[in-house]
Image (cartoon, rainbow, N blue to C red; front, side, top):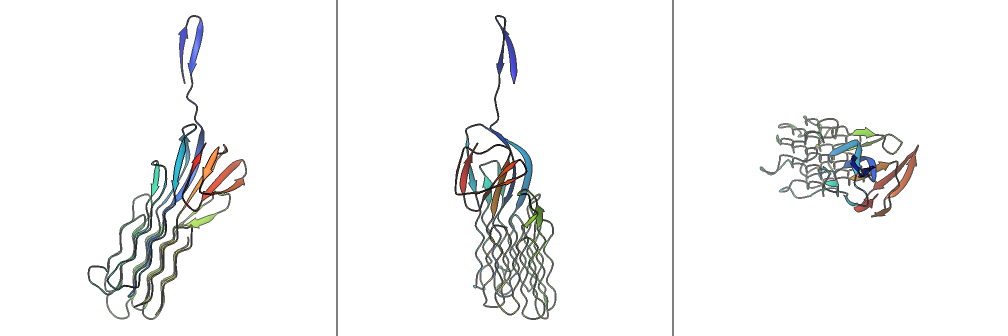
Length: 276
């Protein structure tokens, strides 16, 4: 706000803000590979309070899809899609996992959180600073265990003999009025012994002589790694949650509207837009 004196009057120039919002944005989780594949990395996790918006402006909301799992021993899992609020905030998709058979495809991919490395010593992918953590490394020797995918709060565990690495834990948020954990990494597969557990926050379990389980929808959890020839789990889709004291004047994409205390909460599980 600025003021100036003009002919006995004080003129005030005021630029109002439409709304101040709090947000939680989670990218899509990474898909997992086969052949003692690592766990998919969790989607990036970003949350903050007090983002000021311009009046009568439409903001595009993008919700990232989970990355696909694979049954091909020559492919890594597919990385998840990024979620964003306009061009202001972007949470990256989780990295796809490495597989344990074909050289060159064993490392996990980097992302919001990194995918776990396949067995036979595949390295985990890197996480993005402020969004997630790295995937674990696959074990070499004996009964192979693949690395777990990284999560929002912790890196994926390394694989061990006869044990897949656990997915890294996600992070809890109370933006909806209840505590919900998002962005857990997928567990790594093993050919015998103990499967890698998915990380809290929607991470899928690794397979033990079978397919990995998929990450939970709208949590950004990574998919669980698959055993030789069995499908790696698909990553869980992301989510965008907007909380404000002001009601939106328009939305698209059919967000769920809920209320907590004095706040109005818009939960987008698919892409759309919002105007205040």
